[in-house]
Length: 225
Image (cartoon, rainbow, N blue to C red; front, side, top):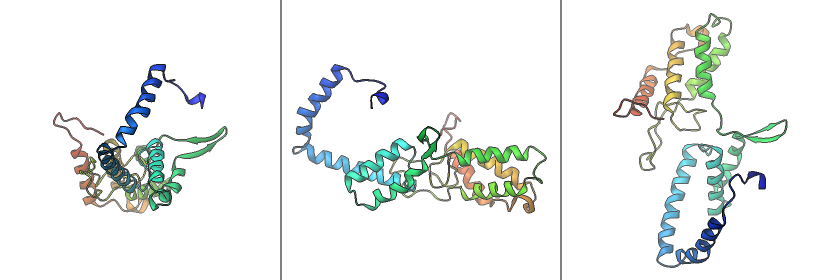
């Protein structure tokens, strides 16, 4: 659509892209270049399938979600990979007054609930809102990533065991500040009676979270996301 064309291509770009399509593309489809392309595309699909499987087909954002889904459809429109993509597309969509919208992430549940817990713990309202905080506590415990994804280093991923994501456990991507805020919230809840907020998280899981946070530390003592 013209409305979505924020940066129109110049005539020079159109000329270059036309030449690439007309002269270079046929060369890449001939031996031996086509063999190299096949290997590259095969390796690329392995990375795409790995990302899909480790994020429960949610993806990291709606852009990669849509692109990965299209790649799976091109590979095989009847594949299980493509079929598993379809229901998770609704994680990004919501209906507003002026039509369908797509959010830039599948949510920020863990991030926001960690701050909500901290806010409640800083007040004298724990007794009044005990059931609400108890549900938030259970959500945080259920949202922790409990194991590393298989072969994560091979696919240039960071460890995830013990971490929290920005959204939910399905997302699978460890985030340092989300993990830190979740640990802070859970430590605050551990000081409150379990009768009000539920049983505290196991210490071993907190140790895993701290190990994950420290794994983000660079030699300069700065943390990376």
